[in-house]
Image (cartoon, rainbow, N blue to C red; front, side, top):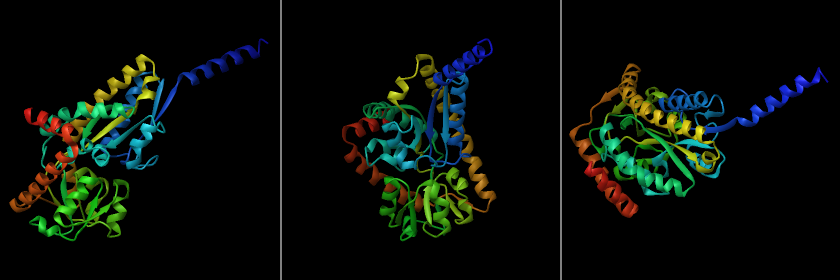
Length: 322
């Protein structure tokens, strides 16, 4: 008994430690080297440290666990405890999710932050109704147009194969006469290589991550909008944590939001320089192109207000007062 008792006690202690540790999955649709993924990876590491390993979060990058459009449902249904989503991907479900995908409504970091503050209360209420928490949100850099040929106006986009990754980008294609093709970030490189996509709107970040410069040589720096990613959490999973662990998650989320906004700003110019270094022309849009796209934005705002109803008007009114 003297020989076996210590082993029994050690086994019991290890079993207790294993039971005490909680493991969560965090799927995201973007590559490991993308700044959003780096930010959520740091977020997970911060929680691990703050809880002394009590809550372990595994980040599944590049749509390896769930495809980008599936992540929200996975979190809502409890298949993943938390996940990172592009809010505007879900605007067909509820128009407010697409607020930051409206062209030229908020076209700078300062304007984007104001729009987020206006959008956040109704966003939190909707997610709560769906059994989820909004933990933090971080914008992508301003969106421009990648295209294979020089363009001077929206008319020059007629007939081009245009990547649509959400309802807003599909609607832009319709309004300028392009051919929308649904392609998520993880499949974009192959879509360009095979000629499925000839043009799309996104940030310098996506352009660099997907090596767009190998297939497309022009980027028009429209600064059209700053779409946001959001880190959402299953409410039941969060409620099951003890209070100190909940506090650690909330603190790490607040830090990730602050860090993420600063990262997005700093990375914007860096990505454009990297695209230029790899042979891409970074071009300021002509007055005609900017005017044409602004009209597209105005049309989409009016359509969005009709779809979003009182909630949408509340968000826009609050934004305009800031």
